[in-house]
Image (spheres, rainbow, N blue to C red):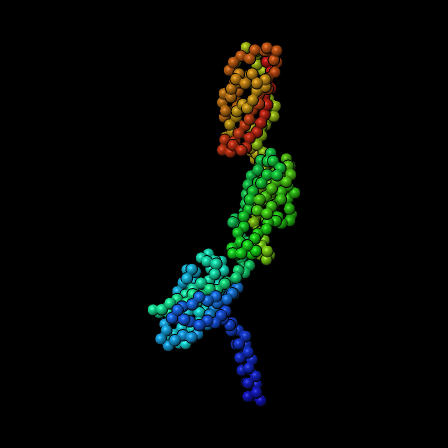
Length: 336
Protein backbone atom coordinates (compact mmCIF):
# COMPACT_ATOMS: atom_id res chain seq x y z
CA UNK A 1 0.00 0.00 0.00
CA UNK A 2 2.81 2.39 0.92
CA UNK A 3 4.65 1.51 -2.31
CA UNK A 4 1.49 2.23 -4.31
CA UNK A 5 1.05 5.64 -2.65
CA UNK A 6 4.68 6.53 -3.26
CA UNK A 7 4.33 5.50 -6.90
CA UNK A 8 1.28 7.77 -7.29
CA UNK A 9 3.15 10.73 -5.81
CA UNK A 10 6.07 10.18 -8.18
CA UNK A 11 3.70 10.15 -11.16
CA UNK A 12 2.04 13.41 -10.04
CA UNK A 13 5.41 15.11 -9.55
CA UNK A 14 6.59 13.91 -12.93
CA UNK A 15 3.46 15.31 -14.58
CA UNK A 16 3.86 18.65 -12.83
CA UNK A 17 7.49 18.81 -13.92
CA UNK A 18 6.67 18.09 -17.56
CA UNK A 19 3.89 20.70 -17.53
CA UNK A 20 6.19 23.44 -16.18
CA UNK A 21 8.93 22.97 -18.78
CA UNK A 22 8.49 25.27 -21.78
CA UNK A 23 9.59 23.76 -25.05
CA UNK A 24 12.06 25.66 -27.22
CA UNK A 25 10.79 27.98 -29.94
CA UNK A 26 12.75 26.01 -32.56
CA UNK A 27 15.31 23.28 -33.16
CA UNK A 28 18.15 23.82 -35.62
CA UNK A 29 21.30 22.18 -36.88
CA UNK A 30 24.65 23.94 -36.80
CA UNK A 31 26.74 24.15 -39.96
CA UNK A 32 30.39 24.91 -39.30
CA UNK A 33 31.33 24.46 -42.97
CA UNK A 34 29.07 26.86 -44.88
CA UNK A 35 27.11 28.58 -42.09
CA UNK A 36 23.34 29.03 -42.13
CA UNK A 37 20.54 31.57 -41.97
CA UNK A 38 17.49 30.33 -40.09
CA UNK A 39 14.25 31.86 -38.84
CA UNK A 40 13.80 30.15 -35.49
CA UNK A 41 10.16 31.16 -35.03
CA UNK A 42 7.83 33.63 -33.28
CA UNK A 43 7.07 34.17 -29.63
CA UNK A 44 5.21 36.79 -27.59
CA UNK A 45 7.23 39.22 -25.52
CA UNK A 46 7.66 38.29 -21.89
CA UNK A 47 8.82 34.81 -22.90
CA UNK A 48 11.35 33.10 -20.64
CA UNK A 49 12.98 29.77 -21.46
CA UNK A 50 14.74 27.95 -24.28
CA UNK A 51 14.85 29.79 -27.57
CA UNK A 52 16.71 27.32 -29.76
CA UNK A 53 17.96 23.74 -29.40
CA UNK A 54 21.06 23.31 -31.57
CA UNK A 55 21.98 19.82 -32.81
CA UNK A 56 24.56 18.25 -35.14
CA UNK A 57 27.52 19.80 -33.30
CA UNK A 58 30.73 18.03 -34.29
CA UNK A 59 33.18 16.83 -31.60
CA UNK A 60 35.74 19.42 -32.67
CA UNK A 61 33.36 22.32 -33.24
CA UNK A 62 33.57 25.22 -30.82
CA UNK A 63 30.55 27.53 -30.60
CA UNK A 64 29.94 30.92 -29.12
CA UNK A 65 27.11 33.47 -29.19
CA UNK A 66 27.55 36.98 -30.60
CA UNK A 67 25.28 39.90 -31.54
CA UNK A 68 23.88 40.54 -34.99
CA UNK A 69 21.76 43.68 -35.54
CA UNK A 70 20.26 43.33 -32.03
CA UNK A 71 23.26 44.85 -30.28
CA UNK A 72 22.01 44.19 -26.75
CA UNK A 73 21.27 40.51 -27.40
CA UNK A 74 23.94 39.26 -24.96
CA UNK A 75 22.00 40.87 -22.11
CA UNK A 76 18.95 38.81 -23.11
CA UNK A 77 20.30 35.45 -24.28
CA UNK A 78 23.03 33.00 -23.36
CA UNK A 79 24.47 29.90 -25.00
CA UNK A 80 24.45 26.81 -22.80
CA UNK A 81 27.18 24.64 -24.26
CA UNK A 82 30.40 22.84 -23.34
CA UNK A 83 33.16 21.87 -25.78
CA UNK A 84 32.59 18.34 -27.07
CA UNK A 85 28.81 18.41 -26.58
CA UNK A 86 26.69 17.38 -29.54
CA UNK A 87 23.81 19.66 -28.52
CA UNK A 88 23.57 23.23 -27.22
CA UNK A 89 20.78 25.54 -26.10
CA UNK A 90 20.20 29.26 -26.59
CA UNK A 91 18.01 30.44 -23.72
CA UNK A 92 16.81 33.68 -22.17
CA UNK A 93 18.59 35.42 -19.32
CA UNK A 94 15.52 37.58 -18.68
CA UNK A 95 12.05 38.04 -20.20
CA UNK A 96 12.13 39.18 -23.81
CA UNK A 97 10.96 42.78 -24.27
CA UNK A 98 9.65 43.73 -27.72
CA UNK A 99 10.11 47.47 -27.12
CA UNK A 100 13.78 47.02 -26.24
CA UNK A 101 14.45 44.63 -29.12
CA UNK A 102 12.76 46.71 -31.80
CA UNK A 103 14.76 49.82 -30.90
CA UNK A 104 17.66 48.18 -32.75
CA UNK A 105 15.97 46.07 -35.39
CA UNK A 106 12.60 44.60 -36.30
CA UNK A 107 13.57 41.14 -35.02
CA UNK A 108 15.74 39.57 -32.35
CA UNK A 109 18.85 38.49 -34.23
CA UNK A 110 22.08 36.78 -33.22
CA UNK A 111 24.92 34.58 -34.49
CA UNK A 112 25.87 31.15 -33.27
CA UNK A 113 29.43 31.29 -34.52
CA UNK A 114 31.83 28.41 -35.09
CA UNK A 115 35.33 29.06 -33.79
CA UNK A 116 37.55 29.63 -36.85
CA UNK A 117 34.47 28.99 -38.97
CA UNK A 118 31.37 30.65 -40.41
CA UNK A 119 28.49 32.35 -38.61
CA UNK A 120 25.06 30.75 -38.26
CA UNK A 121 22.54 33.60 -38.30
CA UNK A 122 19.29 33.33 -36.37
CA UNK A 123 16.12 35.41 -36.42
CA UNK A 124 13.38 35.34 -33.76
CA UNK A 125 10.19 37.34 -34.13
CA UNK A 126 9.26 38.71 -30.69
CA UNK A 127 5.64 39.86 -30.96
CA UNK A 128 4.50 42.94 -29.07
CA UNK A 129 2.02 42.47 -26.23
CA UNK A 130 -0.07 45.29 -24.79
CA UNK A 131 1.81 45.38 -21.49
CA UNK A 132 2.51 49.10 -21.13
CA UNK A 133 -0.12 51.59 -19.97
CA UNK A 134 -0.18 55.13 -21.37
CA UNK A 135 1.63 57.47 -18.96
CA UNK A 136 0.94 61.20 -18.77
CA UNK A 137 4.04 63.35 -19.19
CA UNK A 138 2.87 65.34 -16.17
CA UNK A 139 0.44 64.42 -13.40
CA UNK A 140 -0.81 68.01 -13.22
CA UNK A 141 -1.51 70.50 -16.00
CA UNK A 142 -2.19 74.17 -15.29
CA UNK A 143 -3.10 77.11 -17.45
CA UNK A 144 -4.64 80.56 -17.14
CA UNK A 145 -7.28 81.92 -19.52
CA UNK A 146 -8.67 85.33 -20.10
CA UNK A 147 -12.41 85.49 -19.71
CA UNK A 148 -12.50 86.86 -23.25
CA UNK A 149 -10.98 83.67 -24.73
CA UNK A 150 -12.75 82.80 -27.97
CA UNK A 151 -15.10 79.82 -28.03
CA UNK A 152 -13.49 76.91 -29.95
CA UNK A 153 -9.96 77.75 -28.80
CA UNK A 154 -7.57 74.99 -27.71
CA UNK A 155 -6.61 76.17 -24.24
CA UNK A 156 -4.33 73.34 -23.16
CA UNK A 157 -2.88 70.06 -24.44
CA UNK A 158 -2.22 66.96 -22.35
CA UNK A 159 0.04 64.14 -23.57
CA UNK A 160 0.30 60.50 -22.53
CA UNK A 161 2.92 58.15 -24.02
CA UNK A 162 2.36 54.42 -24.44
CA UNK A 163 5.68 52.58 -24.83
CA UNK A 164 4.21 49.57 -26.65
CA UNK A 165 5.88 49.29 -30.03
CA UNK A 166 2.93 48.48 -32.30
CA UNK A 167 0.31 51.01 -33.31
CA UNK A 168 -2.60 48.86 -32.20
CA UNK A 169 -1.20 48.66 -28.69
CA UNK A 170 0.13 52.20 -28.28
CA UNK A 171 -2.84 54.17 -29.60
CA UNK A 172 -4.14 56.45 -26.83
CA UNK A 173 -7.62 57.94 -26.44
CA UNK A 174 -8.50 60.74 -24.04
CA UNK A 175 -11.60 61.59 -22.03
CA UNK A 176 -12.67 63.75 -19.08
CA UNK A 177 -13.89 61.87 -16.04
CA UNK A 178 -17.16 62.93 -14.36
CA UNK A 179 -18.08 65.48 -13.26
CA UNK A 180 -17.33 66.85 -16.73
CA UNK A 181 -17.20 70.69 -16.92
CA UNK A 182 -19.83 72.02 -19.30
CA UNK A 183 -17.42 74.60 -20.76
CA UNK A 184 -14.68 72.25 -21.96
CA UNK A 185 -14.16 69.06 -23.98
CA UNK A 186 -11.10 67.01 -24.94
CA UNK A 187 -10.28 65.83 -28.48
CA UNK A 188 -8.28 62.94 -29.90
CA UNK A 189 -4.83 64.53 -29.68
CA UNK A 190 -5.28 65.52 -26.03
CA UNK A 191 -6.29 69.10 -26.80
CA UNK A 192 -8.71 70.67 -24.33
CA UNK A 193 -11.19 72.90 -26.18
CA UNK A 194 -13.32 75.75 -24.84
CA UNK A 195 -16.84 74.98 -26.14
CA UNK A 196 -18.82 77.76 -24.43
CA UNK A 197 -18.29 81.42 -23.64
CA UNK A 198 -16.85 81.64 -20.15
CA UNK A 199 -19.27 82.70 -17.46
CA UNK A 200 -18.28 85.93 -15.74
CA UNK A 201 -18.62 84.31 -12.32
CA UNK A 202 -16.42 81.32 -13.16
CA UNK A 203 -12.91 81.68 -11.75
CA UNK A 204 -11.42 78.16 -11.78
CA UNK A 205 -12.03 74.69 -13.22
CA UNK A 206 -10.42 71.53 -11.82
CA UNK A 207 -11.09 68.17 -13.47
CA UNK A 208 -9.47 64.80 -14.19
CA UNK A 209 -8.47 63.55 -17.65
CA UNK A 210 -8.08 59.86 -18.52
CA UNK A 211 -5.68 58.37 -21.08
CA UNK A 212 -6.59 54.84 -22.16
CA UNK A 213 -5.19 52.35 -24.67
CA UNK A 214 -7.05 49.68 -26.65
CA UNK A 215 -6.50 47.11 -23.91
CA UNK A 216 -8.00 49.29 -21.19
CA UNK A 217 -4.69 50.18 -19.54
CA UNK A 218 -4.90 53.79 -18.40
CA UNK A 219 -3.50 56.73 -16.46
CA UNK A 220 -5.00 59.94 -15.10
CA UNK A 221 -3.88 63.55 -14.64
CA UNK A 222 -5.39 66.63 -13.04
CA UNK A 223 -6.13 69.77 -15.06
CA UNK A 224 -6.53 73.17 -13.39
CA UNK A 225 -7.73 76.11 -15.50
CA UNK A 226 -7.81 79.51 -13.82
CA UNK A 227 -9.91 82.25 -15.40
CA UNK A 228 -8.58 85.80 -15.38
CA UNK A 229 -10.26 89.01 -16.47
CA UNK A 230 -8.06 91.77 -17.87
CA UNK A 231 -10.11 94.94 -18.17
CA UNK A 232 -10.41 98.64 -17.46
CA UNK A 233 -12.19 99.63 -14.29
CA UNK A 234 -14.41 101.84 -16.47
CA UNK A 235 -15.29 101.21 -20.11
CA UNK A 236 -16.18 104.82 -21.00
CA UNK A 237 -14.13 107.82 -19.81
CA UNK A 238 -14.84 111.49 -20.41
CA UNK A 239 -12.70 114.58 -20.81
CA UNK A 240 -13.33 118.30 -21.46
CA UNK A 241 -10.89 120.58 -23.30
CA UNK A 242 -11.04 124.05 -24.80
CA UNK A 243 -10.80 124.43 -28.55
CA UNK A 244 -7.45 126.24 -28.30
CA UNK A 245 -6.16 124.34 -25.32
CA UNK A 246 -3.19 121.93 -25.31
CA UNK A 247 -1.74 119.78 -22.56
CA UNK A 248 -2.80 116.85 -20.44
CA UNK A 249 -6.42 115.68 -20.55
CA UNK A 250 -8.27 115.65 -17.27
CA UNK A 251 -10.11 112.31 -17.50
CA UNK A 252 -13.16 111.40 -15.43
CA UNK A 253 -14.49 109.56 -13.48
CA UNK A 254 -10.91 108.42 -12.75
CA UNK A 255 -7.54 108.01 -14.41
CA UNK A 256 -7.20 105.22 -16.97
CA UNK A 257 -6.65 101.97 -15.13
CA UNK A 258 -6.67 98.39 -16.40
CA UNK A 259 -5.68 95.39 -14.34
CA UNK A 260 -5.76 91.61 -14.27
CA UNK A 261 -7.90 89.80 -11.72
CA UNK A 262 -9.11 86.22 -11.19
CA UNK A 263 -12.24 86.93 -9.20
CA UNK A 264 -10.41 86.89 -5.88
CA UNK A 265 -7.36 89.09 -6.22
CA UNK A 266 -6.11 91.78 -8.57
CA UNK A 267 -2.67 91.75 -10.11
CA UNK A 268 -0.29 94.69 -10.00
CA UNK A 269 1.59 93.55 -13.08
CA UNK A 270 2.83 96.43 -15.28
CA UNK A 271 0.45 97.60 -18.00
CA UNK A 272 1.26 99.61 -21.15
CA UNK A 273 -1.37 101.97 -22.56
CA UNK A 274 -1.65 103.16 -26.16
CA UNK A 275 -3.97 105.08 -28.46
CA UNK A 276 -5.23 102.78 -31.21
CA UNK A 277 -7.42 105.18 -33.19
CA UNK A 278 -9.26 108.49 -33.11
CA UNK A 279 -12.61 109.41 -34.65
CA UNK A 280 -12.73 111.63 -36.65
CA UNK A 281 -9.43 110.26 -37.95
CA UNK A 282 -8.08 113.73 -38.91
CA UNK A 283 -7.52 114.37 -35.20
CA UNK A 284 -5.32 111.29 -34.79
CA UNK A 285 -2.12 113.33 -34.58
CA UNK A 286 -3.56 115.79 -32.09
CA UNK A 287 -3.40 113.21 -29.31
CA UNK A 288 -0.42 111.52 -27.71
CA UNK A 289 -0.06 108.94 -24.95
CA UNK A 290 2.16 111.08 -22.76
CA UNK A 291 3.01 108.33 -20.29
CA UNK A 292 2.29 104.76 -21.54
CA UNK A 293 2.84 103.33 -18.04
CA UNK A 294 0.14 105.45 -16.39
CA UNK A 295 -2.22 106.14 -19.29
CA UNK A 296 -1.90 109.93 -19.31
CA UNK A 297 -3.08 111.49 -22.56
CA UNK A 298 -2.05 114.89 -23.92
CA UNK A 299 -3.40 117.13 -26.64
CA UNK A 300 -0.34 118.25 -28.56
CA UNK A 301 -2.06 120.54 -31.09
CA UNK A 302 -5.07 122.75 -30.46
CA UNK A 303 -8.19 121.03 -31.74
CA UNK A 304 -10.33 123.92 -32.97
CA UNK A 305 -14.00 123.14 -33.06
CA UNK A 306 -14.59 123.44 -36.80
CA UNK A 307 -18.08 122.09 -36.30
CA UNK A 308 -16.79 119.15 -34.24
CA UNK A 309 -17.95 119.00 -30.64
CA UNK A 310 -16.87 115.52 -29.65
CA UNK A 311 -13.89 113.33 -30.48
CA UNK A 312 -13.63 109.63 -29.62
CA UNK A 313 -10.22 108.31 -28.58
CA UNK A 314 -9.84 104.51 -28.45
CA UNK A 315 -7.41 103.22 -25.82
CA UNK A 316 -5.80 99.79 -25.50
CA UNK A 317 -4.09 98.39 -22.41
CA UNK A 318 -1.59 95.56 -22.83
CA UNK A 319 -0.04 93.48 -20.09
CA UNK A 320 3.67 94.25 -20.29
CA UNK A 321 4.89 90.64 -19.89
CA UNK A 322 2.15 89.07 -22.01
CA UNK A 323 1.15 90.92 -25.17
CA UNK A 324 -1.73 88.49 -25.75
CA UNK A 325 -3.62 90.03 -22.83
CA UNK A 326 -5.28 93.27 -23.93
CA UNK A 327 -8.25 95.39 -22.87
CA UNK A 328 -10.00 98.31 -24.53
CA UNK A 329 -11.72 101.47 -23.42
CA UNK A 330 -13.00 104.71 -24.93
CA UNK A 331 -12.29 108.34 -23.96
CA UNK A 332 -15.00 110.73 -25.14
CA UNK A 333 -13.41 114.17 -25.51
CA UNK A 334 -15.79 117.13 -25.57
CA UNK A 335 -14.49 120.40 -27.05
CA UNK A 336 -15.76 123.43 -25.13
